[in-house]
Image 1 (tube, helix red, strand yellow):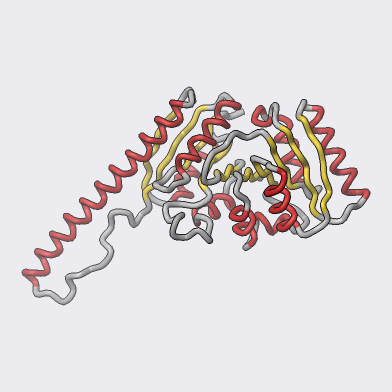
Image 2 (image 1 turned 90 degrees about the vertical axis):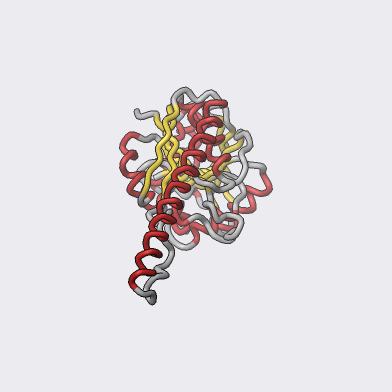
Length: 284
């Protein structure tokens, strides 16, 4: 199985957390890391044409000046990108990640990720981007796009890193949720961690049977596992349990047949990932 993690970094306050979480995952998987910074197509481009009403001589002079300014902005964007990658490499290497490769790309982030995705085990990205402090009520648009299109697990880093020891799994009995459980049972990432499976909804015999099967799958892999059923709306229950029980990581399947599906696909994706103050691992 491929053992390479992609860490997506930018100039946001989340980038350091992305690096620390990536190092934690890579250490458990014995994986190498590709750290990538993507320059958007508009970075370094002129913001407006100021020359339209000028006479030819003045217009030509201004066009030359604007072109020089564009080149300078592009150089500054490249320099900033290299600095971001150098900082990320230093953090990862300081945490003993064996192999770290840096990639500075330009264009659309989805295209950049697609180019390397066939070789990836997982993607790590921050909850918000460089406008995090100015757009605290929104998730990063790149995160939402990657979650909707990625074929590998996406680890959404919280604002700050803290050691992970307690894991909460949002479980709805769907094929996607069971696939997440199976992946967890096969992954060294979850060794020695306390795992709680949580179903939010009515306490039914059929759901208890599915929870028991999931507990058996994880327990057979040597994971310390328990299960809970809490009545209520998934959004409210998950937020409450995360806040009250001291969990360090929330794991969710990307698709489900209950309302948990809407937490990942649709408008409540942002509400859920944004509401919890811990990282979220999304399985496809």
